Each structure stands twice: as C-alpha cells, then as structure tokens.
Length: 175
Image 1 (cartoon, rainbow, N blue to C red):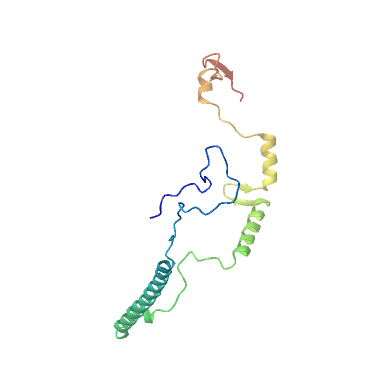
Image 2 (tube, one colour; image 1 turned 45 degrees about the horizontal axis):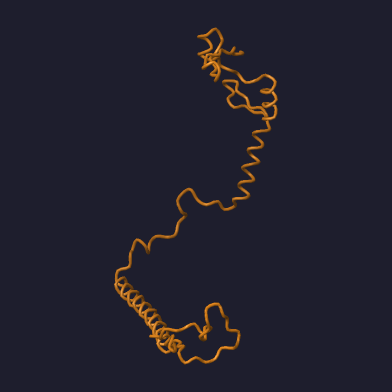
C-alpha cells in the first residue's frame, strides 16, 4: 500500500500563499511504485489466446468425429425413398420467373378493361364502359341516395345536435 501523500505544492507555506518556484524533492512525499504487473497481464492474455485455439480445434475434432460416425451408420442402409425420388417442381404457388414482365402485362390488361366497352352479362344486359365516361356520368347525374328513416318520422326533418339547443334542432333533408 502507498503511504499517505501530502500536497506537493504546499512546501510548508501558510494558507493563501502559493509556491511559484519549481518543485523540490521532498522526502515526505511518496508515490505508488508498483501500479500494474505487466508480466501477469501478458501471461493471462497469452493463456486466453491458447485456450481459444484449443477450444476451436476441439470443436473441429468433435464435429469430424460425429460426421464420420453418422456416415458409417448410414453407409449400409441408404434411404431408398430418398434415392429413388427425383427433383420435381415445388408445389404451387411458385415464384414468378419474370415478375416485372408479368406486372407490366397485368397492368396492360387492367388498363384495357378500364378504358374499353364490353359485355359483363349479355343475358341481363350489363355492360362495361370506360372509367372516364363513368366518372363524367356520375358527376352529372349524382349518386343515388336513400332517404333516412329518421327523416320519415319527422316529416322530412332530422335531429341535429347543437351545443346551444341541447340537440333539439331540426334540419330539412333534401331528396
């Protein structure tokens, strides 16, 4: 253990005085002479490295032993089913061979359907029209609306809640 050290700047001065001269050697000041044992740290590092190398080779030998043991076990009786089976196509759904080309074709087909006329059900007289024409027709005609059942009870009016009226305001429903 180190001895108790005194302030090396003190040099017997009174409190408040500062020593500006170079430090002289004081026989009462002691420092730790033995901080680290370099030999022990180096020996530990080398031992750790050697232990890692031994473990790696031991694992390699163990896996080699297991491989040869299983190979010897299975040498006499190969699995006949595995030997007779040939590689076949994987089950559905399979991965796409050309995904970009297939996506391009799919979008072209969808665009053709959305921008052309055609029969959906000739027996019922249902047809398909281009989407731009359908949007224009809906914008001119409007969407069909169903009258509110609450509007029928109050002669075409419905209740609209408002803060000032406590929810008792009536509004005419346009049809």
